[in-house]
View: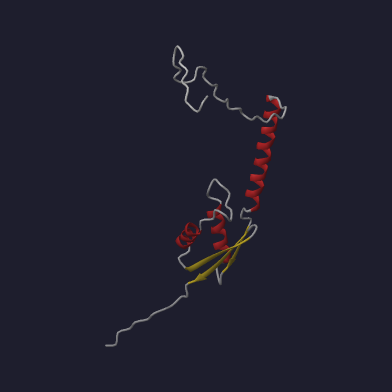
Length: 145
């Protein structure tokens, strides 16, 4: 090869690969625990039961079990009406989902003497309601002839 190019002619030109390459196969990684279907279902059932027990315990933990009303007058009737409103729904009243605006409007509708209501949550199960009552006033007008 004296520094010159040499061209070798073949009978037929090769335009591309003569043998297609195999594409690399994707291998799925599987974690085999050696569990049968019945063992998986049993473990799933146990997991669901444990989750249900924990959810029930959480609901019981934050449920309202005590209501303290601080008011100058009518504590018993306001307390009774608050309990009645809390027990109206199908879901037990709890401190997380307590709708203060609806409770306040229901109490004001029953007791027009209430001026202001303030709610305070005392964890884990007490609701403290401070009620400010309207002060009675008498206004007298007389005409002088």
